[in-house]
Image (tube, rainbow, N blue to C red; front, side, top):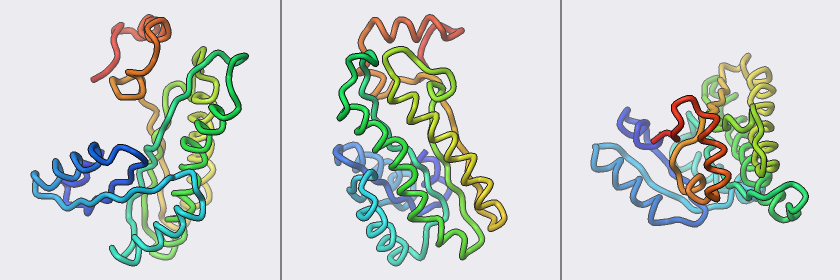
Length: 195
């Protein structure tokens, strides 16, 4: 997503929580293709930090036109074995993070009467999945958040949309145990995850 926006001429700011190498690699890929990009590290689950960081970024770059809420984690476990901290980490990153970032950019977009917020949900938010109760709840919550924000901000020409992809090869899906992955693949018509 970041590379595509960079290729279209957007000034891309990439947020990362822990993997600076991946963020820098994406910045490099964008600049190699003639785009402009930078990266900044902050935890999307920290409301005050997000507000402060976004305010500084808006001042430095003259506002934010498009926000893509793509931060996501999955702590998978059977519900009866789920630890509270696993639940909290998943909801705090996936759902609260989308709230925090959207809240940080919404006023600026409303004042300009222009903006787009794109929330990355998941097919699991629509279907559920055994062993992923927190992830499913968080991604379903992202869909609900998207629908409510779309209704609230449409009159100010701010569009909110969600994308709910199926299973793709990522660091997160790569961490799924083989039994869970096998059950997932059985439900996919092509019997394989996306690339």
